[in-house]
Amino acid sequence: MKQSVITPSARILGVLAAVALTLLASGGPAAAHAELASSDPGKGSTVTSLPDQVELRFTEVVGGPASVSVTGPSGELAVGEPEVSDDVLTQRVDAEDLSPGRYTIGYQVTSADGHSIGGSVRFRVGSAGQEPIGSTGNAVSGASTGGVGPGVSGGVLLALAGGLAAALALAVLSLGRVVGRVPRA
Image (cartoon, rainbow, N blue to C red; front, side):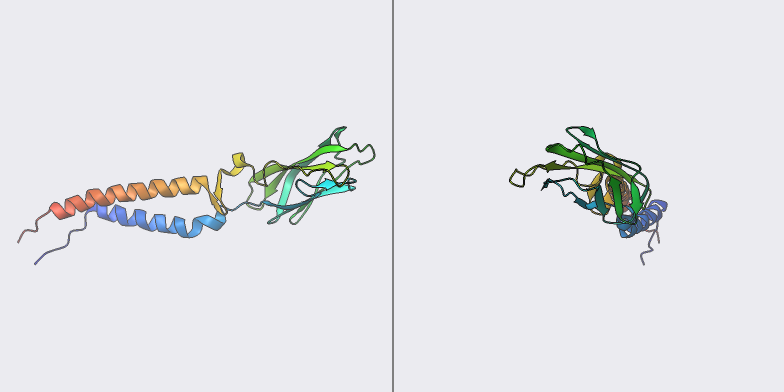
C-alpha cells in the first residue's frame, strides 16, 4: 500500500498558491485610480471664447491637494485656488486678455485611494472652422501608476508573476522529490 508523502516544500507550494489566488481575486479594484472622464473645454476642441472657469470631471471622487494651471499665448490664466467637489475639479480663469491660439489645462489631483494623478488637456481658442488639436495624457500620469490596464497596476502584475514563478519552481522541485521516493514497506 502506497503512503502519500507531503514534503515541507509541497506545504510551502500550497501556501504560495493560496496567496497568489488571494492576490488575483482582490488585486484589481484596490489598484484602480481615478481617470479624467471629461473636461470643459473638451480635449482637442476649438472654442470661440473661454468660459469663466475650466472643469475637469473624473471617474471617481478626487480630493486635495490639487493644482490646475491654464496657460495660453498670453501666459497663465488661472485665478485663485482650484475647487474640488466629489468627482469635479474646477478652476476659475481670467479670460479678459484672451488671444486666439492653443491653450493647455494642466492638472494634479489626489484620487480616493491617495495616489496623485495628473495630466493635461489641450484646446484651441479661435474660429469654429479651425482644425481641432489633440491632448497629452488621458488622465492618469504614467509615472504615478505604472498602469497596465483598467484596475491593474504594473506592481501588482509584477508581484503576481514573481509569486507564480516561485510557486511553479517549487512545484517542479517538490514533484521531483515525491516521484523519486519509493515507499518502504
